[in-house]
Amino acid sequence: MPAIIIEGLTGAGKSSTIAALQRNGAHVRFDEEATFGDFMNQWLDDPNLPAAERTRRLAPILDHISTSLSATGVEIIERFHLSYFALDGAWATYAAIDARAAELGIGLVLLDLPDAELKARSLYRREYDDADWQSFLDLYGSEAAALSALQRSQQRRRDALDQTCLRHLTIDTRDMAWDAYARAIVSFAATL
Image (cartoon, rainbow, N blue to C red; front, side):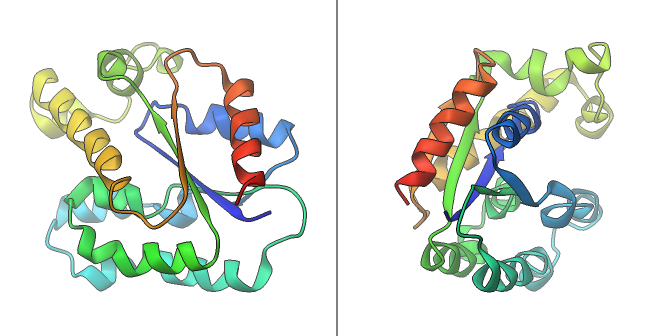
């Protein structure tokens, strides 16, 4: 089966969905550290990073995938070019990466969080005692500004679906039905 990119805003349920996928035989080929890592901190320090630096992690991952997809099971890539696009909104920077991923038959799953859930699931997280665990309030200066930034980031991911060459599936994660989402993703992967 091809690889599947699991995308979504912080709090959308990537980790929970990936854990459910692993219970269904999938394995993580590239986790968030490999695909995104410390990039957000670099970008916050310098939002004008050259395009080559913004995509530096992505091309080698595609090189590796092109030579090593397994014949069985779903291979997961946690976050990829949509996370970068969500920060800067410059699709032209990621179009070639997207086209190459499509040539490899990689699918895309966007875990979508309703805007009404952003405060409880992205800004303040239950599993972190309802704390602003990523210091978004300090970063953006207020709760309203942080929520606006989160909403913009999520909307950019939604907008990217109109531009991507990848076959994709969107899953609304408001119900937190992780095993059901995993089954839907496995079914989707079987069609690629």
